[in-house]
Length: 496
Image 1 (cartoon, rainbow, N blue to C red):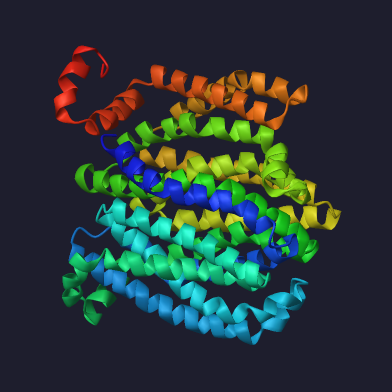
Image 2 (cartoon, one colour; image 1 turned 30 degrees about the vertical axis):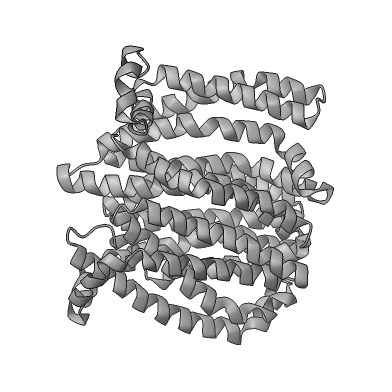
């Protein structure tokens, strides 16, 4: 696990300001844009997200795998060619049938904005493959600053567009411009690799496309099913309910996923690089899986427990009284999102172990489950019941994927199950003062103080009891201290 958390730290500290800025600016957006406008923008982004995952035909997952940088650059250029072709064709089809999309989702307003779809898909696809290349080269500093650029500029453009004329277009163009600026910055970080472009040939790209054809044959349908399973709630909520309900759901997901993504995405990228490296060197990945997954559970579970307790009060206070329903939605979805958080990093093992076929089976099973869940919930006419069924189903589906991957890695899932049980019980016990505070109706600011105290207590317990994690964190701290201060600090026993 050496350097794993330090690399995660590079990514998370670099993006922390950006992500926190993004979270802090959401209350501004909720006071500019109505839930209906959020819903329309979410429908646009959901359609775009489905196209983005297939735009590179899933060859973006192969950027990390070749031993030679020359081959990796050929895969990188292959991805660009695929993105341009797929986004043009699919975008033209969707724009042609824009009115039909507006009618089927009972959101006629969306038809006016689908013309921006191919543009968004191209820049989002480029952002994804640049992430892959920079992760391969372990340039987490450049990658981190690119994420900062995307997050901050997106919010600023959305606020600027909303103050001039509030409409879904402000949210859509803001997201697009954030990607444009981030891509420009990240491409500048590739300047020392431009010489590798001389090795790119059509023949070599074809050879590598065949070499990694399982990403196309199995990975791409699986990625499409995965994206559909993520975006299906938006489509089904719009279909069965209305854009206002979709707007509440969009804010709930945005508020929870932004902080989660700040750490989760960084862990996924570093884990993928480390797992690929361990596979090339040892032929297996059980060591890194065993060391990382149980600690990911330990570190990640407590914030979700706290959030479930405080969600409604937080949403009302931060976003305004009109968004209380979004807080209820977030509270219901939090257990599922925790399951996603602990599964997402090891999901890259499907690529490392070349299990794309099994992944495609899982993704299609998940998609079918969601269709059934939302049909049952949607026909009931109750969005709360629908989201509750969705959250329960999500925990079961993502849990089954985790069990499969941990077993295939050879790490054994007994340790992960014990870690989950132990730290869930510990989180509940430590958070009891907060539960009591909510029950007796303490003010929110006092509840936040109690939450902070309980968080310190929880993570101190983790720090004291986990020797490997403590050693890694102390090593990071030690590495940031000037050498002249190390000797006397060691004599004081600060690094034991």
